[in-house]
Image 1: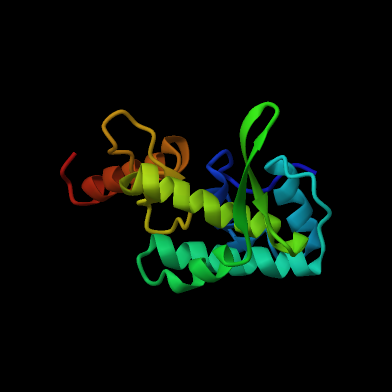
Image 2: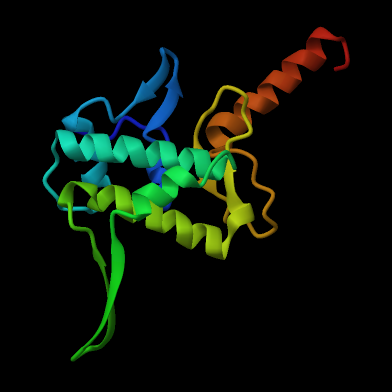
Length: 174
């Protein structure tokens, strides 16, 4: 089944945030059941078995990431990160760094939390929420000058432009 979400392809942490989105029917949530977890795992090339414990772990990580990017709290993200670590070693191929998460159901959640650390380290000012007032999606601003405002110009950007145009028409400015 194709993913129903309107915006895909963001880094893992933001893609987990984007498992909630607005539709014509209101707020939608991909993580309401294990089938949604399977969809999210497949979309992110994480060939892991999905289950109820993983669903709960992903929901916990999603909230922790949201609190962190909004600047509300770091404690919840640190609690997710405490569930694993990067194990460094030297292999025949050279230095290796592998995630080590004792409870396998927490691996995808931990990977998303760890990905947020990478984003915060490299480009903290480029993690943005769509500027459309009715959109809840997040994106990594990869524009040259860092001024992107919408998760999608074709969706939310055009809606904003149309709203401004019709407001001008109603006020007799055009």
